[in-house]
Image 1 (cartoon, rainbow, N blue to C red):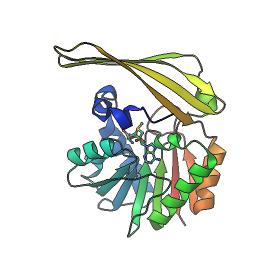
Image 2: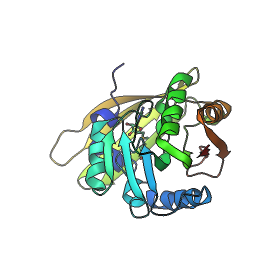
Image 3: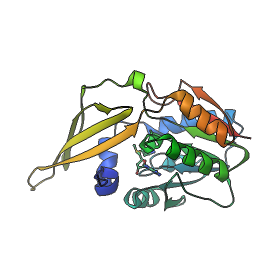
Amino acid sequence: MSDDTIYARRPELYDAIYSFKDYRAEVIRLAELLGSLGIAPGSRVLEAGCGTGNHLVHLRHIYSASGFDLNPGMARIASEKAPNASVFAADMTAFTVDPPVDAILSLFSSIGYLLDEAALRAAAQSFAAAIRPGGALIVEPWLTREAWVEGRPHMATYDRPDLKLARVNISGREGDHSVMAMHWLVGRPGEPVEHFVEHHRLWMCPRPTMLRAFADAGFDVRFEPDGLLKDRGLFLGVRR
Ligand SMILES: C[S@@+](CC[C@H](N)C(=O)[O-])C[C@H]1O[C@@H](n2cnc3c(N)ncnc32)[C@H](O)[C@@H]1O
């Protein structure tokens, strides 16, 4: 199926539907963790799968921040919001940076869009090649099978005078993939209500598989359960 996600088709809706997220508080926590991994303010920090740049807008006040996203529309919004951060379009399974950076972050489950172990290992290798020895990696994964409740209805809304959004889905599963058909209603002044459906598929990668992929790529890595969002945790790595 071709990519019909809002990342590819409707990036302008992303910030509204995720307006409940406290990106500033997340960056404060990330800076604490980066410090514990030896990454000081002013270091070169790259975000892989940066979306519309909601972490970058805060990271750039602390670090020399840059980012990339698979979808050029998302990257374009990020570069508009964080004009002093370098932002480009790239795939985390096959990107290069020169010279290597001090740290890479991949947040809010961007890595979950890699659907098998081969793709995960390709990303881990790309991360390892892009980070200097002694540098750090922080990855926020997608949910695991244990945390995924199948058949549960979910709704997210956004309610401002000029834009109303309602997004509803029932959590689905095919093997170890989460599958979600998100039904959107979009209301704007003076226009008919728009309805569209986008489809997401993410791999519920077991934690040992993720740990092994990063270790084999050259990281000393551990899982930190006290992460940014409930049930996701963070993988923290140091490049050997
Ligand atoms: C849930 S969003 C998270 C965006 C951002 N990290 C945040 O916290 O708001 C997932 C993002 O991952 C990006 N993405 C998916 N697969 C990717 C890949 N292979 N390489 C780079 N980015 C990817 C999507 O385009 C999307 O912007």
